Amino acid sequence: MKKLIILFLLISNLAAAQGIKKLFKFSTFYAAASGGTSLSDVDVFSVTNGLETSTIQTPFDYNLAFGVRKIARFGYENRANTFYDGTETSWSDGASIGKVKGLEFLFETDIKRQEGVDYVNQNHFIRYVGNWYILKGEYLQDGFADIEYFETSQRYRYNVGKLSLNIGAVQRMSEPYGYDPLEEWLLDNGSLHYTYLALQEGYEVDVYSNEYFDPNGELVATNPEVWEEVVIPQMLSDYTEKKRNELDNKMQQSLVVGLDYYYYKKDFWLHTWLNLMPWHYDDGGSFSYHNYNDGKQWYDYSGGMIFGYKINKHLGTFVEGKYNKYWNREWYDFKCGVNYVIF
Image (cartoon, rainbow, N blue to C red; front, top):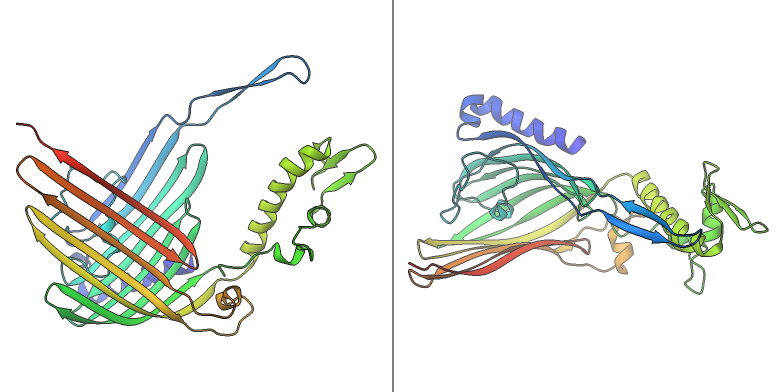
């Protein structure tokens, strides 16, 4: 929430400086809902106490999207729909430089359920591009990839024709990625003392009657197999999430170098960008990522490419994608294909 407040304060200050009407000119506010059938019902059979049948049902998928965006479209981007419906994918939003100079911004929240899993995606950023500098603030939460951070950057920009080079500093705030709550419970042989951990978390074990109870006193297993294969994995997942949530966010200062290249014609276009963070400040804290990387530096990077080529009036090909790797966590999307028009 603090990260969102910072972004809203930034845009509020800009609104006061430029005027509300000028600031939001050409921007679009949108709210949309979509949904559809998820996985089909699955029948599960058991013969433990005679033939028993149960049905696993997966609730329908849905997506609730809310946002406002003011981002100029590149030449290869077509507004296919009359309205924004929240399902648009604009990978060029990840580039350091937009099509036009000046201020651009995006605030979007998606509340989703996919195949029975609920999660939230958020992508908010404010970007100002000048002749020789780039300023940007961004908050990203990808519930499906389990990544969340707040990032600000200040970069010097140098243009070489259609190529824009930049260098500067990045400040990222996130949970201390790399921290493993289970490490302190590992034995010398590498095994995990999971039963003792479960007892510390409030579980109870009656070894004489083979009964296992959760912290609420409910019976969750009547044999060691179910205890080890079903209950313990869920307990470890809950414990890991709880310990991660107890920690405060950590600030990471890094050096960043990047490039953006954009070339467009009606029959050929190439848009690519790359951001590399080769050096990170070690503050010596207990949860510094350096501690989880043997005290060494590491490379964080992100990039993307959008390529299209109309070979002739019938045949065309395209490749589009983006890739991110922060703190050894990866998330990416891509698509490619060939179109052949018959007429």
